Length: 75
Image 1 (cartoon, helix red, strand yellow):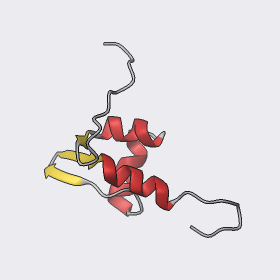
Image 2 (cartoon, one colour; image 1 turned 90 degrees about the horizontal axis):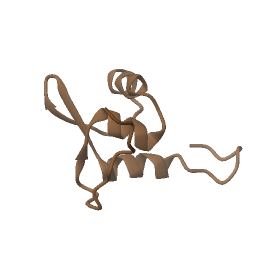
Image 3 (tube, helix red, strand yellow; image 1 turned 120 degrees about the vertical axis):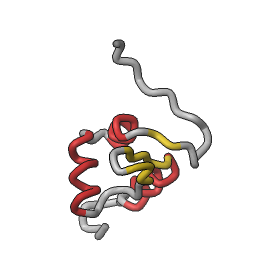
Image 4 (tube, helix red, strand yellow; image 1 turned 45 degrees about the vertical axis):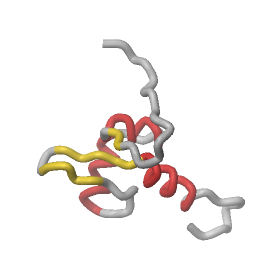
């Protein structure tokens, strides 16, 4: 197994697994799992009881919603 960066589709509605989503967000897979359980993370697609995917558009929207210009700006 190689440690290559995931290749991303240009389609914003394409689905990525939680490992790819964690890589896009620069967070751990465990952080995504905690957010799904507690709330506060990006929207996700529950494909089955044990399979979760994220739309690229939802990940990018979540990032954009947290982008601020200065430290006193509320999220």
